[in-house]
Amino acid sequence: MFSSIILTTLLAVTGAQAAVVEGSWGVRADFSRCESNPPMEAVLEGAPSTKSSPAEGITDFAVTAPFEGRLFLKPAGAVGLGSPYPPQEVDVKVFAEATAGDPGVWANASIVPGYLPGGPVKQMLWNTRTDVVVEPCQNETVSLETIFNGGSLWVYYCGAPEGPLPA
Image (tube, rainbow, N blue to C red; front, top):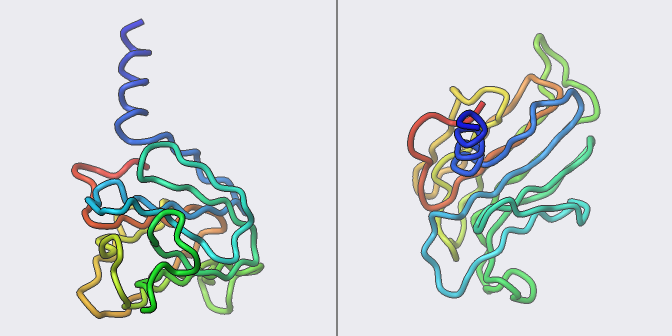
């Protein structure tokens, strides 16, 4: 009984994350630390309509390889981008096969500067290597790739999570 309470508490605090499955891809937008008015929503252009929200301010998208799209925040319910200015975005590319090289790259994500309607990207990482984290400076384009065939890109807006990241 006690161990199930601990497990339930840990899942509630860290968010349930599925294990990495070869060939399975996802993108998580965590804007739960943003204090924005109006409320924001995450959009992953190019993704199928398969998305879920495990908690307030967190949106998970499932994608299949090959995939190319862009992740950004916009005011909830707004038409288009919700602003005349291009938003800060994360360009996501998942390849059907690993690129040439040893080891080859299976996916790449790049943070592109832009207008910040909800808040800036504070951290970005692939859940296959939670020890490799990108923390961009203002108006800086940065990229992060993965050599693993499968995983989820985690994008944290407005603030980084405290403590160790879930594996």
